Length: 252
Ligand code: NAP
Image (cartoon, rainbow, N blue to C red):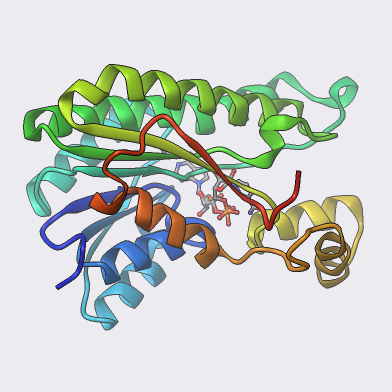
């Protein structure tokens, strides 16, 4: 018996990285998982891996910043797996640059994927959750919400997601819906690989340097985040809502 048996979960941006690790973990805990990513092709590896382990998953191509695609995706999930009661708003991109070099497009795209995407998916999901009088939403914030050079767009979006989380917790709490955020630090994924590339530092070296500044003396892995999300969407965390949990090895 898994603690998420019989539940349907949607994880966005789950083709790789933190989203993939989360989708696999929720499936291992018994949930039927809709693996959303920009194209259905991008979801294949995660879906295959969940099925190979005996879990239930479907892959759904969906750009979370497009309202029509989000509506269609949730309708398909409900029809194929059942009403979604767990949502992890994980899809994300970076378009880093110092403010004076940041284009309007860099700003808009980051806002659209992180903030508008989380809004559209939460709005679509809450219908099913309110109907069930049960739901769990976890938003992906970041330590960058506290400020990070070269990330004016990303840090504003990640700070915005914290306000979004606290507001949804207030609005949706009366319907039995818990809404929380996790704020990871340095996690080894394609996203952090891209950052290292941009600043011209070898990725392994970048990780070594980062680990030296982290009290637990290591960088994080996608599973470190997936484990906390799995707790937050379980009934073990049923009295936790409106919180932001930092997952950063103890960094201040
Ligand atoms: P990642 O490896 O880049 O994975 C992100 C996934 O989201 C990719 O598969 C990406 O697809 C997908 N995606 C991008 N735009 C999308 C859209 N519009 N609709 C649907 N899917 C989309 O990143 P990650 O490191 O796992 O990050 C996952 C989340 O954690 C993000 O919200 C990120 O901001 C947050 N986070 C990461 C770290 C870290 O250190 N890695 C730290 C704090 C917070 P494409 O291949 O098309 O881009």
